[in-house]
Amino acid sequence: MSGPKRYSELKRTLPITGKILTGRLRMLEGENLILRHMYPEIPMRVEYALTEKGEAMRQMVEAFERWFSQYIDCHRMDDA
Amino acid sequence: MSGPKRYSELKRTLPITGKILTGRLRMLEGENLILRHMYPEIPMRVEYALTEKGEAMRQMVEAFERWFSQYIDCHRMDDA
DNA sequence: CTGTATCCCATCTGATACTG
DNA sequence: CAGTATCAGATGGGATACAG
Image (spheres, rainbow over the protein chains, first blue to last red):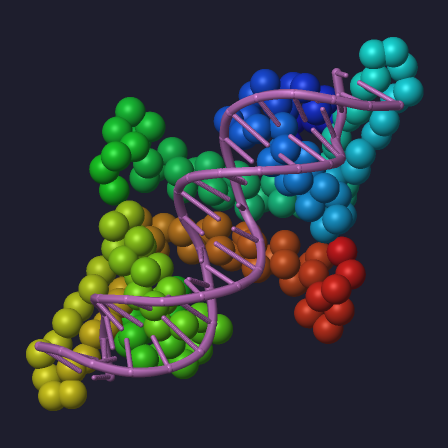
């Protein structure tokens, strides 16, 4: 939600393998939540950006973040 | 989110089997999102109600419902 | 009524190697 | 860099039968 992201940046940031990441990106693309932009440079560059439909999820995400920060203690994820 | 629910009511309402429903209820209970109340009547009655932590998810759910009704056409779920 | 136990198949996921 | 191919293990889910 903080702007377009490159494949490699997502891969570095997220705790999933390349195969899973690619699968998720394809799903999100299929649901029209993100758009894939390929730049035929060398080396190749691919960026993923939210569509309007994806951007519209921001309110949901923010509501989740409020709930999360209030009820989930990151230093003690084991407790409920 | 519309009040306590009996096991049988959830089972009738939701498109999942009893095994899965029980599993989900146990997970939610483990995360302290719902509370299980058993009434030792005959026949037995069990109700599940949201905790405060669960109730606090209401804003998230409402944000989701707004997003959903705006971007997802239930009569054409196949399109993205 | 509210579950549990068992069997079985589909899907998800990770690790690894490879490609344009 | 941005993936794809392949294999194997883990997990999810349904159907059915049974139990307190």
